[in-house]
Length: 212
Ligand code: TZP
Ligand code: MG
Image 1 (cartoon, rainbow, N blue to C red):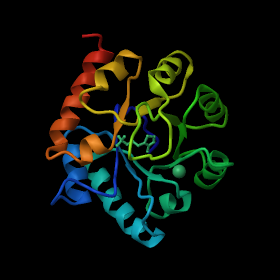
Image 2: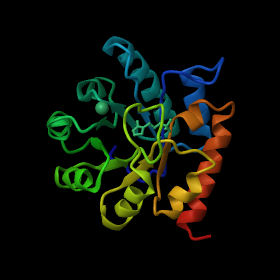
Image 3: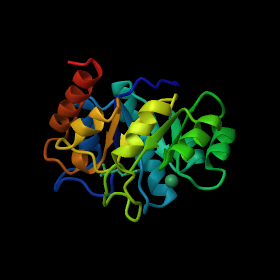
Image 4: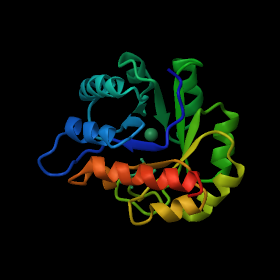
């Protein structure tokens, strides 16, 4: 399945709202309208990741949305994910594409327009544009600000998603800067009601995109 008509991208975290599990939170996010899911867990071992990947593969299939694995192309294949998301590491995109072939999705994190153009030229299916705001979910990575969002809106031709520090209180200004897809982690997984947050973000995206 190479399907890229998403507008709300949700990524797993290492910590969830107290008392909730990854499965509960992601299921609620999917109920709320998340239309693509990524497994991202920087401290888990690969064996633990495979278990989580299989769980999320099942869940995303129930909802008919694409499932992406962060950082591990081989694990993405093993878990029958729809694709992989890589960072700016040397040859990350090329190696992921070689392993996954043309039919699976390869996404790339970008922090500048130059990186966006390189990812486009290198055959990425979509890119992340961020972190728009400073965020504890990606420590040490400076915010790219709305300036890069505006540049992406003008120049990027493949699907791109704004990410980093986005929540209900600032999503509108990201959309006003030209984003048509949003990604959020802590705003969703840290919420007591992930479905409600997702519904609100989706509603904001739809009215922004339709010009309402
Ligand atoms: N890439 C750029 S920012 C980011 C990633 C994975 C983290 C987004 O998390 P949050 O909690 O929505 O800021
Ligand atoms: Mg990475």
